[in-house]
Image (tube, rainbow, N blue to C red):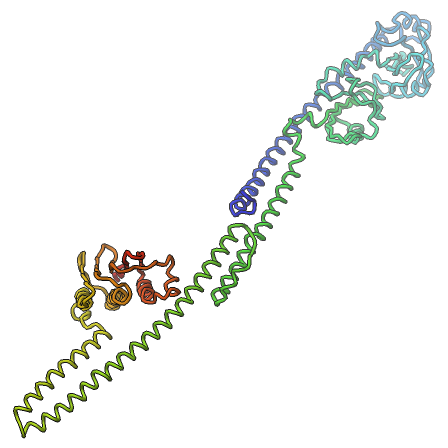
Length: 579
C-alpha cells in the first residue's frame, strides 16, 4: 500500500497521534517509575553511607576508649615522667590497637613521655599541635592522615586528654594509627553497590584515603561534580551528578563524626545500574516523542498538501464545470491517488454531460423541426382538405338553392351530396383533434385511449398490433396519463416508420409500486446504444423523447434490440406519492 494513498494517510493520521499519546503515557509511567527508583536508591545509598560512616567512627572511638582507659589509671595523675614512661612502655601499642607505641605530648605539641622510641614522633609538629588543640575541647580527637616514609603508609594520630590532680589539662595521650592497620577497605567492602559501584573514604580536602573495590574504583575525585556537595553538606545526603567522563552517577555521602577528621564516606554508582534496562533509556523518551511529533506534523503537512489542497482545486474545477467549462477537469490536481481517480471520474462525467448536452441540442433541434413540420402538415391538410371541402360545400349549397325552385329532385340529390361531404370533413377535423390532443384520454381513461391507439395502428395492412393490460387498473394524474400515452404513441410510430415489422404487442402492467409499459415488435431491430447520451448522436430522437418523458416522472427506459431479432422498449414509471 502506497503512503500516498488515502487509506495510508488516514492510518497515519490515526496511528501517529495515538502513538504520541501512548508515548506520552509510557514516558509519564517511565518517568514516575524512574523517580520512584531514584528515591529508593537514594534512600538505600544514603543509609549505606551513614552505616559505613558510623562503623568508621565506632572503630576510631574504640581506639580512643583504649587510650582513655590508660588515662583513667591513677598513675597518669602524677607528673613523674618515670611512672608514666613505665606505664607506656608496658602497654606498648595497646594490645595491637595502634600501629606503634603511644606517647604523651604537652598542649603545644611537644613530646613529653613515650614508652619506646618510634619513628612516627618524627612527624611534623603542626599535626601534634593541631591534635592538642582539638583534644582541649573534647574527650578524643584525631589528625588528618599524612604519608610517613618510615611507616611507608598514611599515618594519623589519635589522642585523648590527660589531666592532673587539679583537673587541669596536663597533656595529650597520643597513639599512631596507620590506615592499613584499621582495615577500612574490608569495612567498605561490606557495602554492596552493584557491579560498577564503589565505596570511598575521603578526607576534608577530597583526597581518597580508602577505596573499594580497588580494581574498578576511581583514584581521584578531581573534576567530579558531586564532590563539592559531599564535602560541604554536614549531614548524610545523595546527589545525582556527572563523573569527569560525563557518565551520570548517583553519589551518596555521610560524615564520619569524629573531631578533627572531616572524613566522608562516599558511595558512588552509575545511574544506568540503578534503573532497569527499560528505564535506562528513559532519557531518550523526549527525543522519541519529539521525533514522533515531527513525523506527525510532517504527515499532517503532507496530508494538507496531498488531500486538502487538491480537493480545493478539484472543487474549483467543479465550479468551472457548473459554468460550462467542461475542459476544467482535464488538468491534474495532484494529491493522493483517490483524489486523482476522483478527478478522472469527474472529467469523464463532464465529458458525458457535454456529450449529453450536445445530444440534447440535436434533440431540441429535431423536436423543433418536427413541430414545425407537423404544423406545416396540419396547415396543408387544413388548407388542402378542410378549407377546400368547406369551399366545395359552400358551392354545393348555392347550387342546391338554385335548383330548389327549378327542380326539387335535383336539389335533394345535391343536398345528399353536401351531407356526405360534411361527414368527411367532420371526420378529418376529428382526426386533427386526436393528433393534437387524444380526446379519449380524458373521456374514457388512458387504458381505453391506448386501445384506440393500437386499433388505429392495427388498421394498417402490413402490421398487426395487439394490446394487453395486466394488474388492477388505476387512474393516474392527467399529466402522467398523457405522458404514458405519448410514450406508447412514439413507440408505435417507431415501429410503423422504422421497424418493418409485421406484428407488435403493447402491454401495460400495473405492478405494486410502478407502472410498466412495453412495446415489442418482430422487426429488423438495431444495435441498442450502451449509454443514453448516444441516442441523440445516433439520430434516435424518438427514443430520446421517450427517455426524457420517463426521467421527468422518475422512471427508467430499457431498450433490448439486436439486428434481425426485433426490438422491445420497456418503461417503468413509479406511482406518484399520495399527499
